[in-house]
Length: 117
Image (cartoon, rainbow, N blue to C red; front, side, top):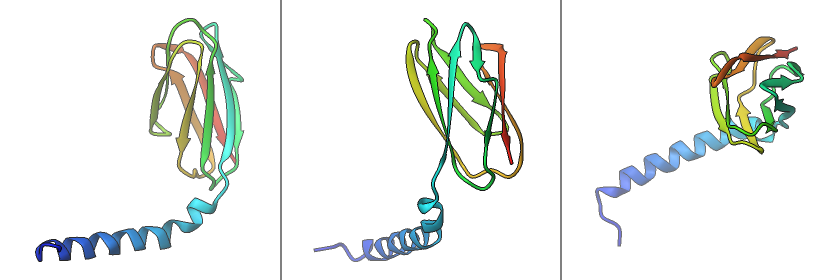
C-alpha cells in the first residue's frame, strides 16, 4: 500500500515523464549525424568536419596515440577524456548553422572545427 503523501509526488513525476515523451518524441526519432574523427600524433584527422543543421551529432573519436586526450569544446558544451588506444563517443544536441571549434584539453595546439550547414 502506498503512503498517502507519496501520491502527489508520483502524479507529478508521471506528468513530467508524459510531457517529456510527448515533446521529446520528434527529437528521439531524429537520426543523429555521425562524425568520425581520429586523433594521432597530437592532431585531429580530419581537422575540419561537417554536419547538417538541426540534427543531433555523434562524434566517434578514435584516439590512436599512446596517451589519453580530452575532446573539449566550449561552443558545443562538451568534454570527454578518451583513453589511449581507444574510442570515445560524444553526443551533441541539434545545432544551428555555424562553426564550432574543439580541441584536446591536454594539448591545446590540437584543434579542429565542426562546420554545421
